[in-house]
Image (cartoon, rainbow, N blue to C red; front, side, top):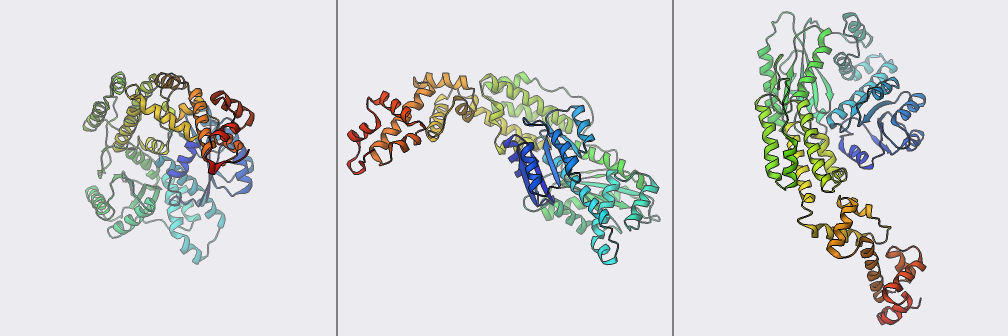
Length: 531
């Protein structure tokens, strides 16, 4: 399947393109576009199956593109990204056939889940449209069809009614187990797996361990880092929850020993097939809430955190610590608060999101008051990736805290170490003399406010940025005139002057000689040439 990513922010687009395990998600080609026009060109030249699109774009909104796709490419599944939780946006996106509506920053596991859902829908359409019922093809597709059926049961794609479920099974030539009760177990991977597809490896581990201990189970991939094991209970064998807990503990130990993974199991209530969708939704919420506890088994009614309101620390104190360079004290204070929440069973996904936004506000205020552009400071790929995962778990949040505070510390110390900034500015100017340099370009490079760097540079060098740049251009031009046989016009272009006459004028103002006369009087005899 082919994927199209549409976002006007280049850094966000690149981060999204490089972040997900596209091969593991079954995506063979990933195309990108910065606006509606480019997106339409991709549709004209390539086959697109799934589109991830930002709503806010300067040359036309993502909703406009979604409407166009619905009209001309109705088979494409679309995932919408936005920075605003606007109900009208979400409603319109759903009306236009959007599959998912996700808020930025989107954790990559949620985005993987959305892509997997889109892929599953497309595959299901393909299965339904194929209408192949011969024995050989059925045996070949049986595992896929079985998994798709149970996937649809869990996600509510098939109405949770006995007749609808039986008809859906019959239409796919599936014989249901002779069971009245089913127990779903959601298995969630909690630590990143390097190399290969985590989804594939997790299914293999489940098949290897579970098949030896249960008469008949069904494994259904939920997303790239989790799957659901559906356990049909035998009619003549009493259900023993503690036996299942023990089996889950054994599976966790097996995965830790064979794959060095951290994962937890979330066990649902035993009930009829009609209850599986509702039970699965509760299990997903339980997994989402568990951001701190590793390698645990949660039986029905057991939760990782209690749902209660917690008072966040005073963000003003964090702001003062940052501005005074007390980053280690800040990290100790913020991480101690998080660990206290864990001890009190008060840290869940919602609390982690609240903490993230609270800390981010203090961080941005501290940076902005120092004239530092926080948005620019954290636009690099590493920062984008760490931020996207920050609310996934306690460890991810601690990693984000250390990253953003240590990076901020460097730039908050500008007043104590201005020479570092001045040297970076000079280096940037020297490396880009052949281009048109603006104050905003230079400010963006050092993540500082343009007015601030102008004042700082003049204070420390006695020159404005423009004066220093012009002076440097003349010095390098003089050196090239003396030591090379480059033409004067080439030298002018090399130091950033596209207008030769203007270059000659500026050079003469600085040296009292035009470039040709300067070369005649100063050039190395071996490099002497006539211009």
